[in-house]
Image (cartoon, rainbow, N blue to C red; front, side, top):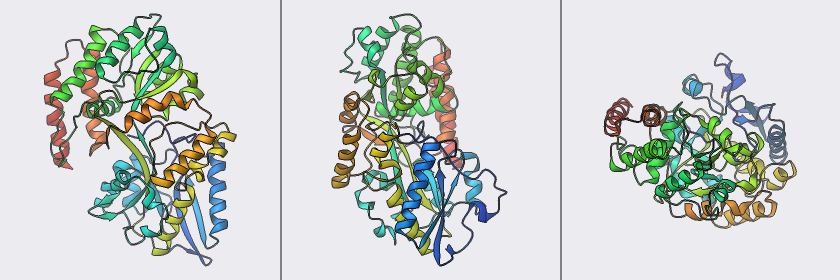
Length: 450
């Protein structure tokens, strides 16, 4: 799944609203030539309702076209950047933009259905490519060929309320590092009373399955085997995840009585100061402050408890298989300008973000390496306007974790695991052994059909 939004201030955005639109309105429909210029269509432009982000995006396209007068960029917006309900239909119907947004989990699928251009012969022209983290580049590399360019990434961690930690007698500078410590901290926080919840988790709309996966990774487990053919949830690690949730919910009463929660419910609890901890990516923090009433100084982020692994996700751009070489080269230049130049562009112009009251200094996983990373961090630090010390534990801890992407057929698998998590959190006598056995069989069937 995607996280709550994009880096910094960006809100989810997207694609053309109707597949009935003619190709010239939404997709790649010609040879990319227009008045002697190379024309490319791109998506994921912020909608008009996101006024500041829309303004930034338009400014950056204008500056790109000024530097590259032989390229014409036509941006498309809608909500969200990629709608799973229409994504495959757009691909199959030839309606996809020349340069189009994808989640990390889309890469292999788009290649498998033969809808992606092979960028391998051209990627040397992308100035930033060698500076991007290798593990992120690998996500868009299929059978040795490069089919996409990463744009952002996130990893899951533990958001916690420093004020509640202090009230409960816990050290806010030493967040829980194990699930045993999470359980103990949650119990103390819940004991404060007044409707305070120690730890909350999702268990509906596939979000419970998503978090189960993250928690399983943190225990050193996995959802499917290395070949992607068999489920691996009915394991000691899978049992440990569910037993811990069961014990916090029913033995400790530290998760509250209201269950079947989704992300908005949990964010509301944290923003109102009534929740001690939950799992999320860093981009939850500005949402908690700007939309849910939270305060930056009270919110801190720790690495995933367990110390073994964390779920990562993110996005990037792929290129339409119909693109001409000129369009591919133009698209790569556009990506460099918009997203992949440290300290500038739509996601990296931290001075501009700060000036417009956008949070700067959140601990996003680093996209770049080497000198590019150093430059990006230098500019970010110089413009930071959030308490960066509250996120240092997350940054330090992530260095020691295995970073793992979501499983294949993620949404179908999450739907299965949703039922497992919700059963444990709503039924005191839930049979964990049977739940995992049944889930394993259902996941095997999903994998067999893919």
